[in-house]
Length: 358
Image (cartoon, rainbow, N blue to C red):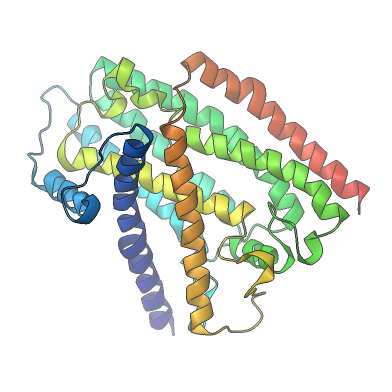
């Protein structure tokens, strides 16, 4: 039985990481280039394959075949380690995300932990070490400044990011991401409390702190993934390319893979916490986890989850090509002076509403 369980886990890991996450990373880059071209009224990639759909394959082959050049003055061991430290945590965090309800009797999650959000925050925070090491090991001023900026930025916004989900945990009363989605499937999404037990005075009142949590969480996620308007660590107009200035070939590609993988996992977490994960709206095909469901329903749930994630990724892309970059002092002020206090007050507000309508 242990061998069977191990084999099933291996199939889930290979299926999710290599057949879902990695292709999504590749085509998120393609979507970014196409959407930015549409926004700026120009032509994006449209030569390699139909509408440029094979462009990610060509780019991947280019990175693999390019000369792996290591500058002479870098600290070689740390210089090689940094890209892996950026990529691996982003992939590890997908282990606890429930990307579906059930398929052939198997829960669609790699590791069904009872502390899913804590695991994600603990592992995701390790990626800052990769960026800091890249800046320091490159032995160059621009990467070093990018690494220092990233340290300040990611540590600052981790606080508001963690505080922003506490109202969600208070409302759902659970730390297991799978059970949190099941609850929303039956009782209504936190951001759409229009059916089940959540369609009540209490649910509608709690919508106020939930919306505040969602705004703080989303903006903090932009900062954590170094996406515009928070891409100060790799600010091209000031720092050439920031912490990956001295990188080329596959090591450079790993940084990009890590950034887009973190964006996909962040989108998946936002969907899970606020938009019901794999569940459909208004309780359609809901599942409370008590009985097995048909395989076709499990496939619909998986498609629903990844459809929501794609919408969130497009939102990330739209924001990047629509807003200007913050100054660094503005970025730090927003995190410490505004979001930290708003997140703390929001926790008190949630507790007050829950006590009021108990």
